[in-house]
Image (cartoon, rainbow, N blue to C red; front, side):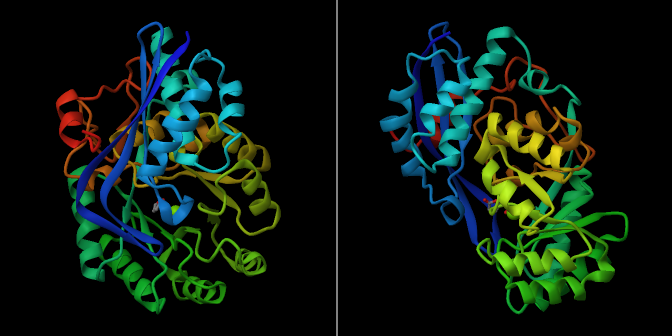
Length: 367
Ligand code: MUC
Ligand code: MG
């Protein structure tokens, strides 16, 4: 099954409700649809969401690196040669979203070729995940109203609250309002996107000790090596590495430095192949993992749930699978549905999703 072409199609779909967090804002899903074609006529799909504030990639850079470097390197190879393909892609440093979309499109094509769902090929542990919803920056009453709406409409009861504003008491008050408004039955955890210093983070965690938060993600800068260790030592809840642990080597460094003791896995930046490595590494070292979200659209969200449902360690806690709810539209023929706080992986071959040609024609940016 030879790869005959790799397409990278830029598209743009506006958000109805932009997401605001300490390292940036997302108003439009300026993503790239990646399609890998094979000589058997099968086409694998995935999407690459550029996040310049974290990885330096832009929509233009993703299209360019795929068309100019990655496609010429892998056309002619077998779609099953994933290790060889990664060796070629990794001759170019960086570009994690572009590489990951190619990887996941290859898994989609492999699933289609054997008529099996990717989630079963990966691990087949479960067929669904509980959903965690991200609550972005806004005045506290709006954050509570947004969470209540999502709980009422979709049955979601786990919320990741964006923090990292200054003064940190703004976020302490927002978290307090969320706990008061939503009650004790919801799970709340926080993500600072590196917005605070280590000492602000320590003070904020102390000020929120009575709120029963379950996780604290990426509160201070990744390069504050000793500050992070100092913070993790005194934190009473697991400290999750997200932007600071985007590759297996960084995961090892974060954990052995004592800077974090849980890992966020995002298929948008490590695809399925490297996400497996990070998952097994975390499992071997005995740390918790969370399925994160890179503000993915519906294609990326289906990739996250296909991976997260496949393994016990990823399926056992709610995955971040709901950012697409704030988009005005998407590209799929059959939209994703979150019901009773749960999202199912699809039972069809590969990822089980199809692109609607009319929607793609409408939203693509290259014609
Ligand atoms: C997160 O977990 O940080 C915001 C930007 C991004 O790349 O991911 C999100 C959520
Ligand atoms: Mg994060």
